[in-house]
Length: 80
Image (cartoon, rainbow, N blue to C red; front, side, top):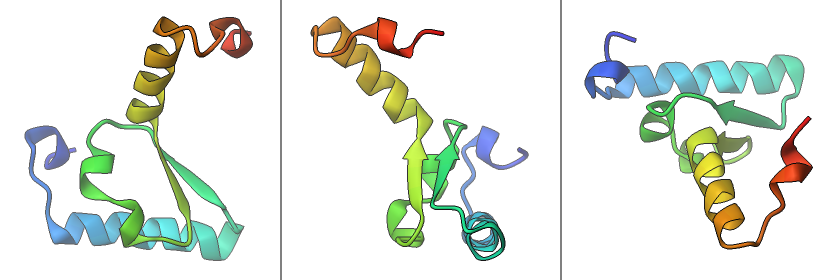
């Protein structure tokens, strides 16, 4: 929080995220991780941990908004 929010991206922080993701893979057999904060995808890339799918929530939301506006997606399918 003290780094990412201030646009500070260190190799140490990146390695911490990668280690946590790897531990989740090893201990809980996760197949994917949602990067649910706008700064995390700036720090951790798919190439850093290629065997675990990373989902950039900002990119996914933006793509859905574009697809909806262009008539390629029905927003009703995503509503409760």
